[in-house]
Length: 270
Ligand code: IPD
Figure 1: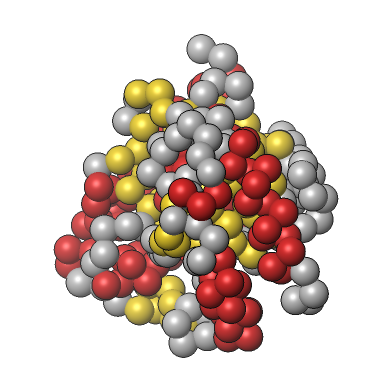
Figure 2: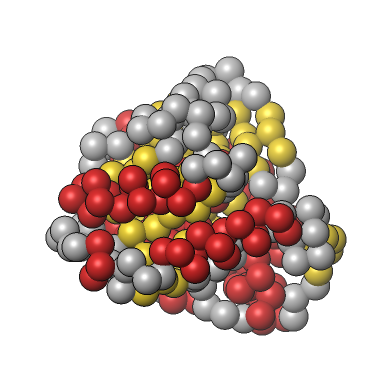
């Protein structure tokens, strides 16, 4: 088995274990452990337990690799590889028992900085839907083991576009203004509530495109690779616009139409 495929298997196995744990905790009742940047930015006890499980599993099977997680931060390794982890993406959905949350595990080469890293493999597991998305570099993208592809090109006016809102109050207001501008130019807009699943939805042809500004590396590391391996162009992570934190993912023909519109809408917001 090629090295990157082995890494994808490890990511999937670990993400599945963490997703099972989080699902079990969900059934027992969710406990908010803390608020982070704002009252809506919550951490549950399960977020922390899920991250600890993943961290321990990686330390046991890949002791020389680094780790970079949403809840417990980073640790540098010696191998040049780093595991980038969101233990529960879509925590607010998780809290409300909306079945759109996921465990996201990716392994990247280089510093854990999306402007420069190379994502080798990743897995996004949504246990409530019984879905596991996986990809490794050059190996295509899969949903529950079956190959998936972006939906063939569509016109901007016919595109179903996903987006998200970070937790900073001022940025949320700006994002709402951008959504107001965009909604008249596309078929419709969706806010699923978990960036990793938005990117997997593009990969599986369930969304035509997705954009969001200000995501954290753990939100998009696995999902961006899965979308790219399914045929999407993913801009804003160093390759398309170095240093930008505005991510746009879409089938290449649609990307060419949507990206300039999004860029224009965001221009002047800094
Ligand atoms: C959030 C979700 C949400 C996105 C936010 C993220 P979290 O991650 O992915 O959809 O819009 O920007 O912070 O807090 O649920 O892990």
